[in-house]
Length: 114
View 1 (tube, rainbow, N blue to C red):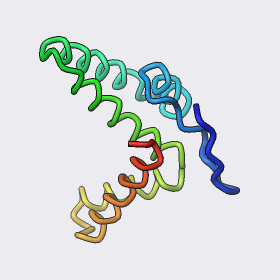
View 2: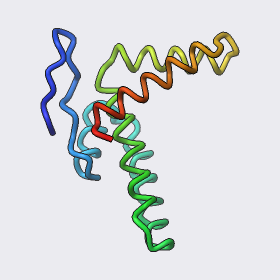
View 3: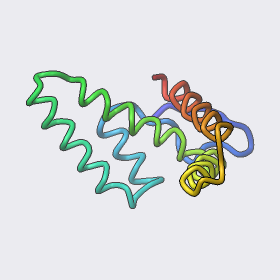
View 4: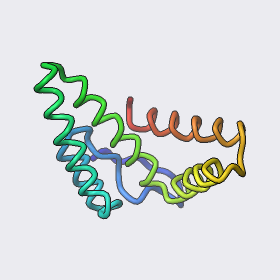
């Protein structure tokens, strides 16, 4: 995992290496309840990669979980994202919330090196 200083409210964990093992270790530390989802998604990605004879499903898997971990390792950012998602789901938020979600996800992608 690569260390990234983040001021007094730093991340819970360093950004992991973008490998199944690195991502799994990060999920185990900060999102242990999502380990079954992680394992299922990895299995589906591997199966689809084999069927398609393409690594694209595995790249999608890594991208998805890297962004999730990048967001969730910062509790304040994760809380804000979940708040915005709930507001959209209940119809309480509009275009501004969608824009903020996009910005959060873009920042997480950049942080993960994607």
